[in-house]
Length: 287
Image 1: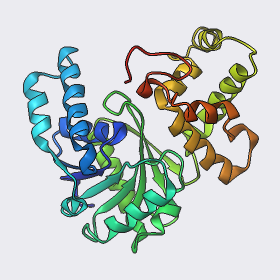
Image 2: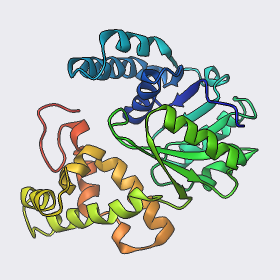
Image 3: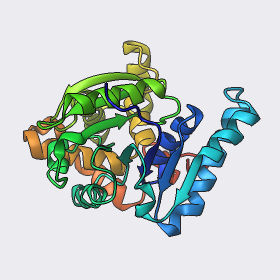
Image 4: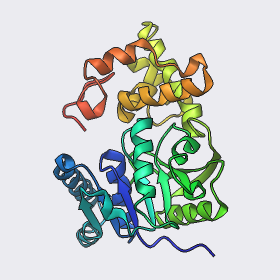
């Protein structure tokens, strides 16, 4: 029987990485969260703010919040993840950065530790090539915001072992997530289907075919979606979507995955969505 996951580490303390760490800590799992020193304070504030909001909504008690925060060890040193049973990289969606992190992790953690990537589009086999025993590498693609969204995609690369998959499934269950398993190709299940839909909405808006409000209301009321496509683009982040589009287009060379020119210009103008305060819509404050 595979060794259980008693502790995890997360590399990258941004919105996704912090959300993974928060979710694990609430589930009673000790977490080492590594972030660059210049971003550590922001990571701490984001974690505390997220848990404070959860207490105000009645999702957690103040005692549960305090216990969760006590389970999270913040560090700027990558070597501090060494004793973790499973480590998840959640750095920005850049293949060179992710590959370099995977290579470093392989030299730090134990040989039987699982090394996972939270990439939303980069093939896991490509990242696993940097690890000397790639059978322990797996994709764990969480969805934003992690404490709220119930899904995690478990991505099996060519060399991923059955034991690694079992340990990833056990972790997902311990976190209270519904796991779905997918083979290793860019976009996996959800983004393979979602990105063409979102890009079609962006092109429709770019062509002045309909207003942003009517595009979103059409899909909410006509298709039963909780959120319209342009609002969802803002929620995900246009910079993140652009990177995912490029990864999908690189692999499949299909026009429906190519990011529309409007996205490039919006990103250049700093209109990244909710996190920057402005995207397809305007927001009172950056998320």
